[in-house]
Image 1 (tube, rainbow, N blue to C red):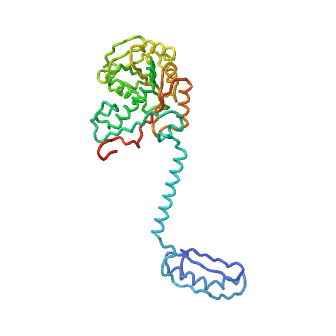
Image 2 (cartoon, rainbow, N blue to C red):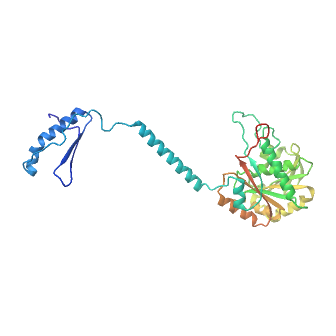
Image 3 (cartoon, rainbow, N blue to C red):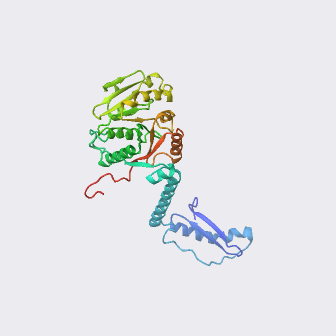
Length: 348
């Protein structure tokens, strides 16, 4: 063929149990593929006689110049296959997520897993991102907050108030992990309970990281302290009609300074001065501080953020709280995305 090399793929396949075989040639040029195949057929007997002797080739199917490629691109089938693979992978990812992301999403799941009364469900609060200068404090006093949030807090306030017996006034709020909203819930409950003239004391019990004053938007330096002692200070926050107790523990070693006997002394000192005392404690799934407060409290509630913490960890933290024998009022599902938080014409 007067070619320096053959830019083709040449394949010879024998048919088992017979003296038949096929010759196949693949090339980018259809005429080149045909020419190579014809040349192979013409020269095969000459070459084969050195291996098998004189042979005669009888052609069953003669080669022809191909009119179209043998590997045409079927774009429609390719797209369909890709879509099928994508749907399958998506379904697999969803199944894996459901199987491994074992969290609490509904009120019924909360009740079934913890076996406690559900005090209420608080909807998630949204702010428009483009409004950067608005008040973003998640408090019932903020008029930018949806009515559903405020209504949920008031409902939970009434449930808690009705569950308390005569003389029970120290209530702690805790959760499993940070970021579940226990500080927001406790602070708003304190504000709601002070609306009708009740003298309410809100205690920032997380001596490792003060959370209440940042939520209220006021620093300790700006507060008007009405009681100042070596162990704690109490300020009156005029804007919210509540009293706020801050421990001096951080300056004295933090968690080493706070223990059940110390907390009991403080609460014995302030119990008779207030109608209700709400304590925001650290997460009981991480540290033991909340359990110190629980040992001297009259009641407690447990905040669970929707679809956030694994159920096994929630159960462990809740069991830690139950081990103190504190009266558990129930649980609160916070940050729920499925709560209809508007009421009006067209919104039910």
